[in-house]
Image (cartoon, rainbow, N blue to C red; front, side, top):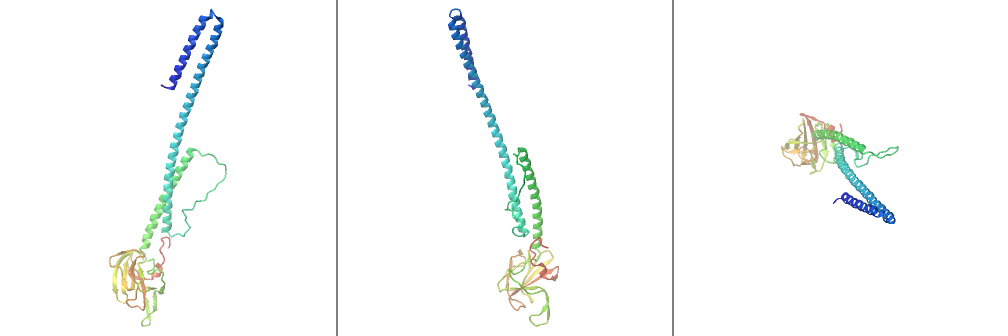
Length: 307
């Protein structure tokens, strides 16, 4: 049984009692006037009690209605907060992706440490009065930030692709040194012949090395020659597929075979002093479309952002 039904039945019983009391007062009125006055006072008390019950019931019903409305408002507010939290989670994921992409581009571009620090907060400021922000403003701001993230992500992805392609191109160009931490002992071009005197055209440059030091590929490519060559001793040649061929001579041992794919920086031989040589070193040549060129112009050009 519902609360309003109980209240209505209570009021009905109160009214019935009042009506019965009125009949008794009318019957006694002709014989005992004193009892009539007392009866009228009793009827008033009964009427007052019925009105109080009705007022209390109305207040209770109003409070119950307000509590129901408050509970509904709380549920709606929580649902909106959950939706905003979900959107903020998406934005956080996009921000993390952009940070990771930015750090990767920094490494690819070989930018100096600290030039782009994606962990450091961005400085902000402002002046003026502060007011409470409206829900519509929050949603509009979130949409604007999301659109900015999408646009920035697309631009960074294009930049990453361009840098990656250029990095691939640079990796196929002789742009490293064949011996780590070494130095040039003899340059390219004319020089005095180290054996019989006189002039000699030196087709490459020589790097200082000890017997057994790893000789490294200066660019990506495929081994096109790996054997002894007259005057050069144990020689490795790499075809880089873009008109460039590099030659590494006087090795003590070869560690790659013809047809093998090698990456820039990988070992291809062990340094030595085979062939026409006065001591352990690495003789390095660069051939461009069948013509020998000075390797110096290619050295130390590993970054795709350099010329």
